[in-house]
Image (cartoon, rainbow, N blue to C red; front, side, top):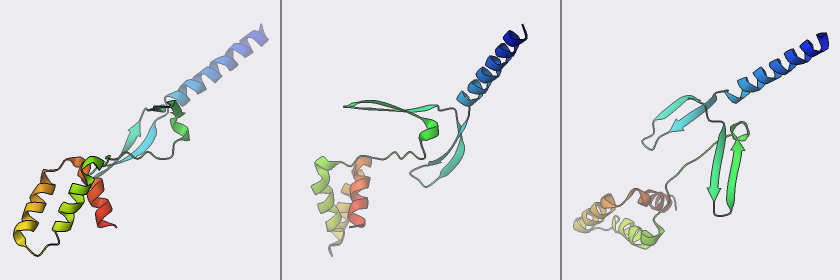
Amino acid sequence: MKKTLLIFVAIFIAAFANAQNSKEKVEFKLTLRDGSVMNGTSNITNVVLVTDYGKLDVPIKNVSSLEFGILPDNANKQKIVSQLKQLSNTSEEQRKASYEELAKGSINTIPIISDFLFS
């Protein structure tokens, strides 16, 4: 009887410890595009990545950082680069037209502009 009770208590403690680990909160830092930084906790247990090659399910305890970004608009890359080059033109009208054209662009122009500036 004592052995059964001891085993039952051991199983209960192990199950309780495992339940505590699954509810463990993960600390994270969120950096927004406007430069704002937020710190907090989350109940995320796994990070799931789905690609054309399959599904990858990574426990959050094995992840050190995640980075999300904006995909570049490669279809209009040459047009965007030519607009950026026109910004250095001496003609004020051409600079203004290029700026207005770039300002109308989608958010996907940001990586191309960034690459151009740092090239």
